[in-house]
Length: 222
Image (cartoon, rainbow, N blue to C red; front, side, top):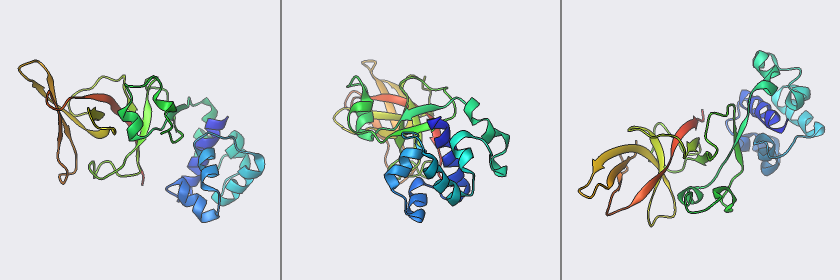
């Protein structure tokens, strides 16, 4: 039930007007790490803690814990959350993503930051989440928003991808633009930012690299 509790808690927090878990924890004086561990499904929620969250967000503790007694705004979907398949995606750093094909388990390198829960299972087994940093992909992708990357998904021109050039520790998130092949049949790839203030990057024979995976989900902040 932990994943379903996490989804209901997140919905209650957002309905109360808090964009992030940190904002809610700051507003009510809760321990940020403890609250985040409840909302990302890493820890179960005890009854007395559920009552505290319920009072803050204007819902019933029973709904947070079991899905029963849903608030009116949640409708029938809230009462049936236990029937929705939940997938927990490891959230890793750009350093871990950059090393993705160099290590056997990219989720145990010490660069992880918990999990992200999504309400379906239509992603590959090696999918991972990244939190966007920097402003190179503005205005469509803002710092702090989360993207889900699938290394096993086919890529086509115009897709958004995570890539890494050799010699760089960190991966980068850009738009994929293939530019053909050189005389030695080595593919030329342009990695294009959406923000015109940032330059494009190129993967080619002189600057080798690889595509790590395709963005398949974008979790926006409003």
